[in-house]
View 1 (cartoon, rainbow, N blue to C red):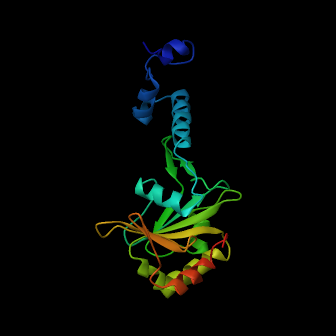
View 2: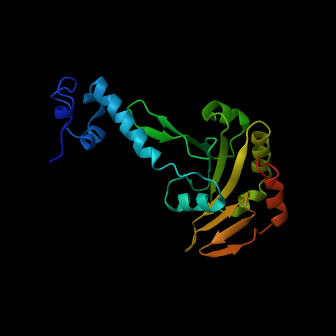
View 3: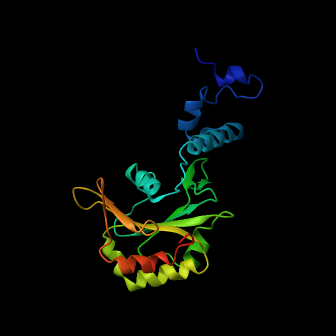
Length: 203
């Protein structure tokens, strides 16, 4: 039988608090005392620690998108903060949970938006994701905003995820290639893709 938290901490764990770690995670946050809230925050952080697979390559990025571990808003841009190890950054919420450090906009976030809404940790970089057609790379306004961001903040990659058809299409500016199913494919406009690559910090 699993030992309860009351047995593990007979002098410190209030009798009305959840007896199991799983119950601490699922309990109404407002009914937890300060000690239980602290334990819950540690548990959430530990769980997310196992989910922080680094985004080191375009293949890693695509895999995380397929698993729904990265945002891919339809016809919008998502900007995700990565740390120096290219791991996703998680922030504590007011109720002791954790959320991925990211912001979603109808347009490519500029340096002003990123600096205000999504600061980077030391040595960190941004990952930009567009959910829609790769034709977005032909948008001069999107490019101008991306260039604005790149002049003050490092961008590791700019990717496009298009799942409007039967098979999702993935494009990576850093890798300068796209993938549909198991097949690699060129950008519709390779010259434009190279232009975007000049905005990346690891070009």
